[in-house]
Image 1 (cartoon, rainbow, N blue to C red):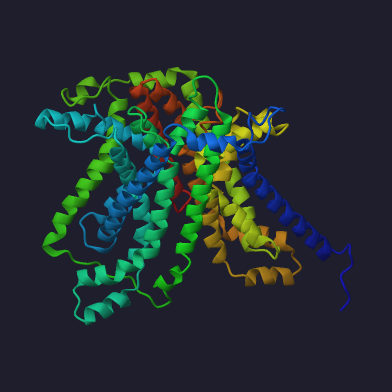
Image 2 (tube, one colour):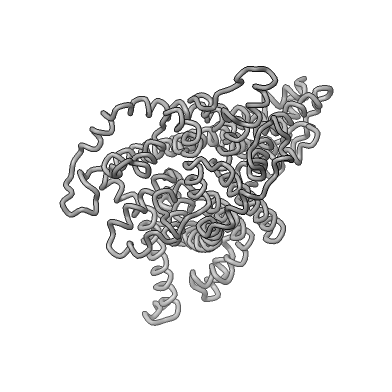
Amino acid sequence: MTELAAGSPAHAGRDRSTAIFWTVSILTTILVIGPIAPIILQAFLDQPLYKPEAALTAGNFVRLFTEAGMGRIVLNTLFFAVVTMVVAQLFGSVMAVIVGRTNLPGRKWIGEILIWPLFVSNLVMAFGWFTMYGPSGYITLAVKAGTGLSPWNLYSLTGMSIVAGLSQAPLAYLMCIGAVTKADAQLEDAARSAGASPMKALLSITVPMMRPAMVYSAVLNFVIGIEMLAIPLVFGGPSGIHTVTTFLYDQGINAAVQSDYGIVGAGAVMLLVIVGLLVWLQGRLMKDSGRFVTVRGKASRPSLVDLGKWRWVAFAAVAAYVLFTIVAVFAGIFMRASVSFLTPLVPFWKLLTLANFELIFSQPGYIRAILNSVVISFLGGIIGTACVVLIALVAKRSEFRFRRALEYVALFPRSLPGIIAGLGFFYAVIWVPGLDMIRGTIWILIAAFVVRYIPIGFGAIAPALSQIGEELDRASRISGGDWWTTVTRIVLPLLKPALFSSFALLFIHFFKEYVTAVFLYQPGSEIIGSTMLQLYAQGDNGPVSALATIQVIITALFVFMARRLLGAKIYG
């Protein structure tokens, strides 16, 4: 058979595909690695990296580790992360077993409420907890009035850690609910045939099979605890309790005179290394998860465990958990936004006012923050989905020899904390010539958000891509189509549901994001999260709650429309 001529259509198709492969790979690498490089460089410079006279030094790390109170900050961070993880796993996994595998009354709507906190930021949750359970919180004052005792102290390391754990419990629930509802019923049936009761079969067979989901969510919640900013800032700041993230925030944003770029860079590198090691550990722990697989071709859905007389006792316990840790938190935000001040001593309907919302909609800066958040989320969701689908197609559906490396690069932002991503882009725009033109615009925020959440979109598209048979690709190639023709005319149309899901997930994450933006926004590019932080610093809790309420309402409307109109799959 004669070789194809250099100018033949097939040869041109290969050239086009190769150019696409390399372009996607290079751009992805630049976007992901680019923001990290200036952080590492700044950590080893004695002056801001944009100054020509800056010289290499290791002194920043020496200053960091000898900084007064740094040991305490590191211990605070580890304690906070551990308690966050333990509390989240305890409540999340228990809720998954009860809601997913028992005949609990109202289990369907309880399951829906349990994932509400995933749709909003920890910043919103922190304000809700502060409003209801803070020192002057609505429920706190009600308990004090009734008992004369101070029931809890959220302005302590243990208190704020428990708040963080309860706020992250829905993530553990979501990770574990799939494991308990998709387990092979034959295993439990075998245990029952050996004399085990339904409950004993559940606890001895199915619960241990949750181990991969519990390990994955445990490490994820530990990482989130380390990189969390909102809850340590709201509850730790007033009492002088600092974690690594609040230390970086204070040094980089709230420095009295000038930001200490060197020590911020060194701290950022330390945080990046810790989170990176934890993500690597997560991968190692999940390496043998295949032995826990129970969903096979002939697997059937396990039956629900009858709780008998304990059915309503379990309902009361679960309902109390949902009421006091989720419903009350959201209710606190809505109530505080709608009254002049919130106190259990006066019925809140007697204090109703629209003043907080009128303030928000009377200030151009606040309106701009809302519009910016919507525009960034919408455009970012589209741009992010387009980028992710190209990456996924090259990594999962091509013959590019570096496709595995591309996938690793694309998933690397899993170990990139939001505050590090924002700091990296901040350094990049003041360091790289030409990038200063997008500084202080919504485009730098879109770029930073897209990079940070590439793994989220990839996780929505890659599984759907693997379900499309590769024989379709081969049939297209036999008919003369090159790679680009094949994926655009055959694969992409079949990916529409996954594309909608990716867009919806990215929209939600972009809309609730605030940590990445704290180093990047300027007047004109404010978003809801950054504006809430500013208002909180001023002590304006009413407008803060009004903004949080607006964010929750927009998010709820979007989730409803995404599910009903786009058929998007959002968090399972």
